[in-house]
Image (cartoon, rainbow, N blue to C red):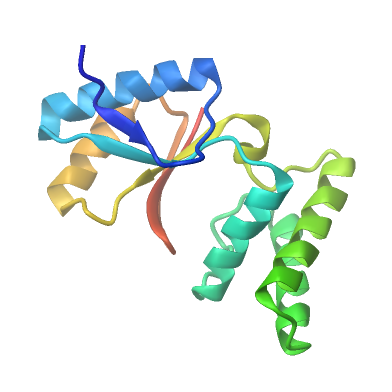
Amino acid sequence: MTEHYTLKAGVILDAAIEKKVKIIADKYYELAKKDIVVTSGTRTSSSQASAMYGKLSGGDKLSVYKDQVSAKGILDTYNTAVSSKKSKTDIVSEIQDKIDEQIKNSTFISKHLKKGAIDIRSRDMTESDKTNFKKAASGTAITIILETIPPHFHLQF
């Protein structure tokens, strides 16, 4: 049987999450006759730091995060490093240090760190596609957020 999703290179999914992706992808294909691309799954603190660097360097203020105290800690770390004219590598490393510190205190800025979230590419979706995707994901994903920097759907399970 044809799969209606692909995983971007390097994406890691827990087996239970992959089953849910398949359900969503099949429903979306029924509605839109299109496949989906999973751009992110389970993340290490390093890959989470890289993702957050991408959001922050693109102008995102991390307002979508539920835990605004942790988000502010990461934003402050980023802003301080940028003000100090540090390299991208050093900034990502400092963000990772902040995320590791938060994890040691049992605080997880993202469910990606706990095998409970995925991202789906949305940049090539029309408005109708986005509506159909939300319908397809509804009932399987607990949370469906359309983010803009970079453009993607963030799903939590």
